[in-house]
Image (cartoon, rainbow, N blue to C red):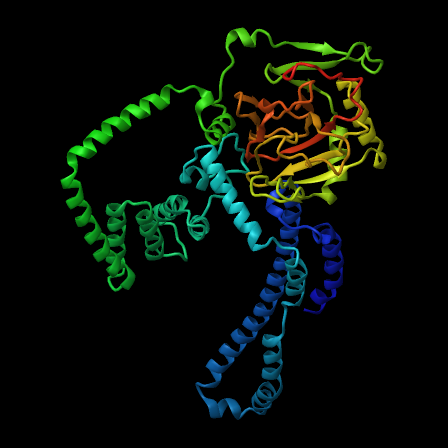
Length: 549
């Protein structure tokens, strides 16, 4: 125990040095990059826990040897107590054992070997994720489930698209599924409550051992189904609950209520059978009409999710034939005459281009190294207050890097200016973003609309004329940049960048550039972007008299 305690100061120093970067951060679930630090934190905890276990095992081994020795001795002594104690050495040793050695044993048993582990745990606990992080990660799973149309069993078994051995190593337990269901229930989200309580029940039925019992799961499940209006199914699960626990008072009351409601429904249905039949025919016709509607008439949310799944609008062959790839030197710019860049058309309206091999791996690592300690929860402009605020529809962390703090950033800024031909001195600093669990940024405009006249007033550089977006990682599944109004989807590819104008040459906003970052299903998404503003572009991109040119 003494040697174990002597290691504590080293552990403290190690942990404090490892955790300094975490102390100023929260919202871990919004950045996979920062969540990796938590893995090392947990690894340190496991090492400390193993040290504690070894110390406990050593202590128990000593106690066991003492017990075994005395067990043998007392077994012999009690066969003939007087004869045994007739030997003066035995009598002395008995006195010694009871007066001294049992006291030593008591001290050994009461000795505390938890000091090192508890101290490490106490140090680390203040940097642990919060309840908000756990809830945020849970809601991210629900979001991924909806966006990518995944059933609960697919997520629970880890059978996700593009998975590797890491993603299928640990399956979700009954407790995990139950926790997801409870979080959905607390938000009155009975749809997801049903899905995850049903998955928990399925795994219990398959024989998985758990501290959660079927009665508890069935109680939540039946209520969630009832809240969605399916009284008959709710009754079935409640009756199953009563078979397991016949004295469950709430279930008894629910059975009576459900049976009363079903009887009432049957009477009402009998009275209006013909009317309902007519409505069903009309409903079927409406469904067919909806299926024939064009992509443009689909609600934005549905279009966004379709594009994220790769089910978006496909370009006609004629439009596709007008997209090219080329070597580009921006009118023989001196920087690119001998080394033109690879340019590839991604979409025609709005015009979106991708530049290949435009940022090196070394530059990417430097940008990430500079950004990681500064990552903070990404914010959005609140149109009411004009101030920056966090939002549930933007799940990522970001940091801003200036050109003067490192030559790599200055070189990247110069490259963007050389390729686009636009002034970047009036642009915003390079923003680096890392997406978290199910990280996304729902449909938005980069430019300020007419109803947001003060959106960028404090910058004094006009509106955001264009967007340059670097992809600094490949993403195993999900994570596309999509444009719901036009049906475009641009997929992340490490080392590339995409560019588009947010404003027409007239200065009017191009509303077709409304875009979104799809949730990251599997993998880690790093991007960096440069928002280029109007000021300084007067001679570089002259104004047009045509509103939409």
